[in-house]
Structures are given as C-alpha cells and as structure tokens.
Image 1 (cartoon, helix red, strand yellow):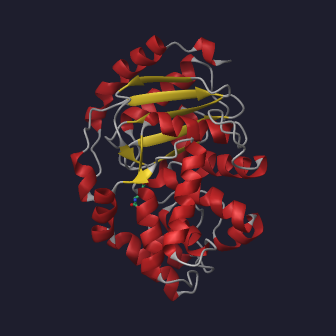
Image 2 (image 1 turned 60 degrees about the vertical axis):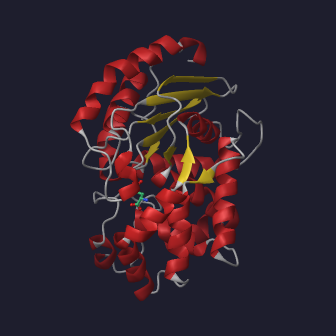
Length: 311
Ligand code: GLU
C-alpha cells in the first residue's frame, strides 16, 4: 500500500458521502467558544512516509486540537522523564468512562488516572513536566507541537483558551481532587493553565496529518526530515492511542476503523497507519462520546476502501 493508491477524487467522494452523517451529532457547547463551529464542515488530509500530502473537503477549516494535544504533552513527558517515571504517575489501561469522569479517580485506591489520554491523566502529565514555571512548560509543549507538525507557526487560539479557562470547572474539580490526594503536587491553577492552553492550539487537517505521519514513521517527520521522537516513544503513544484514544468509544472505533487514533472535541481525529502514513480528519459535529461523528465514518470508509486496518 502506498499513496499512489489514493487519489484526491477518492477522498473528495468519501467526504461527500459521509458529510450528511454530521446531522446525527452536535458540536461541543460546554466550551462556549466551540459552539460557533460549523457542524457540517468535514475535511481529511493524508501524508505518507515520503512527505506527500493529499487533502479533501473543507481543508482550510481551522480548529483547536483539544485532546489531540494530549499525545503531544505525553510525548514530551516521555522524552523528558522516561517511561518509568511517567507511568508511575498515570496508568496505561483503557477506561469505559467518559473523558472527563470524576468517579473512577476516587474509587481506585492509588488515585492514579487510568491513562494519560483521559482529562485527569493529561492534567497529571502537565503537572510533572520538568520546567520552572507554567509558561515554560506550555512553550515546551507548543514547541513539540511545532516540530511534530512541521509548522513553526502553530499557536494557541486565545478566545478558545479563555473560554475554557473561564468555564472549565469540571477539569478544575478533577485537578483539585488529584491535588487533595497528593497525585498532583504542583499548583493546580498553573497546571490547568498549561492544559487549557495546549487544548487551544489551532491547526488545519494538514498540520495533523503531518503529526500523525510523524508518529506513524517512528518519530521522523516526513515533511521536514527531522527525527523528532525516538521509535520506542512512538510505539508507546500509538499503543495508548489504539486502546484509549477515543475514550469510551475506543473499542467500537477499533472494530470499525482498526487504526490507533486520538480524537478531540474540536472535531479532529488523527489516525496512524504505522510505517505507512498518517491521516487526519476534522468534523465538529460530535457523537455522545465526544468524537467526530462524520469523521469516524470517513475514517472507516478510508480504512476499508484502501485496506489500511492494522488492529
Ligand atoms: N479541552 C477539552 C476538555 O478538557 C478536551 C476534551 C477533548 O477534546 O476530548 O474538556
């Protein structure tokens, strides 16, 4: 399988066929600034290991990474601290609970979030990043985002950041609980500031296709040629994406699409075809698990038509 098998016209057709499914979902409104997203927007981008890019649909749509950024902060933490340290602070198992669930944290006696791709886990990851102050921690996450996407201009969307900071009491409650039991030792508001900022990093599907391709190619960015991450970290991250990347929708997604993936409530999903290519979609209308409804259908069609499934 290589990208010659893909034609832009195939991708355009699949976008056309799956776009109507957006009507069955809703855009996220719990972050007020996201409520204005176009529910019918749908875009896809694919980058292969040779750095060739294909795009189809509403490819100019800009959206915020939201939880896709958890892959970036996790990669940074694994680089800076190593696997043993990171997985002493978060687990590595899937959860059947929603992305922002509070319940399980209290029930598990260690009070360790089950994995780094749910909100509680990602907030803990931000709390252990080894930088002197939150601004430096955020800049390190943003720099990692820029290198993984090959786009030195990736920046936060200030309005989305402020909107979530103002209304993010669910995440605040997770973080204060984790502080109360000693899982987080840093200042909670400072940690949340890093988290809210990284969630607001603004991208296009092409940016995310490069990010996904870099993870697929074991850390080598196919667009810039830079070795951004060691192979071992990419394997770890892809394994977590395969088991935990779509929250309580991860099992159904593995059956439908069969690829390691990570979603965000901005409507983006990255999917990795290891050793071959990275795929990214964006469709802001979400299903009940907070995952892009047309985006999942589009990935399913792409995976089926081009024989990409690895799970
Ligand atoms: N910023 C979002 C939150 O914490 C991210 C959730 C997601 O994208 O799934 O609620």
